[in-house]
Amino acid sequence: MNTLDRLNVPLLIGAAVLLAMACVKADRVRAWRDSINPSAPEVPDSAFVAARVVLVTMAGIGVYTAVQGFGDWTRSWVFLPTTTEKAGGRTPGEQLNGTALSTVNRCSRRRSQA
Image 1 (cartoon, rainbow, N blue to C red):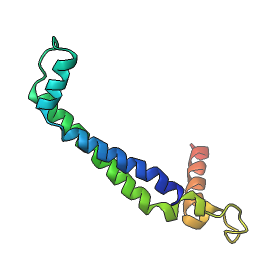
Image 2 (cartoon, one colour; image 1 turned 180 degrees about the vertical axis):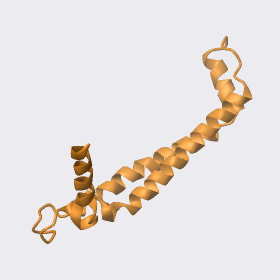
Image 3 (tube, rainbow, N blue to C red; image 1 turned 60 degrees about the horizontal axis):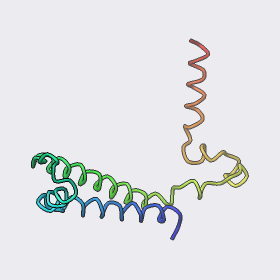
């Protein structure tokens, strides 16, 4: 298990917890709330719907991020060469994207001309 997997697994566990929170029935939450603070005002059903939408959305984003993280382990910075000798005389930016340095040079020339 590599480092990115160790980061993605807790993200998936957190998403499962968020989904579990979204599945709790409103009556159970109201009963728990009344036992803690009986004088609190009643919470409308729309608040529970909004909370469920937010929780499910957050869980979906977490799952998406974790799946993307599992797919990115081969492109992580750990696998980039650290010296120009390993990259065949090129920097890691040039190796991955041949236009990286030319874009930077173009932008710096535009700034100097302005």
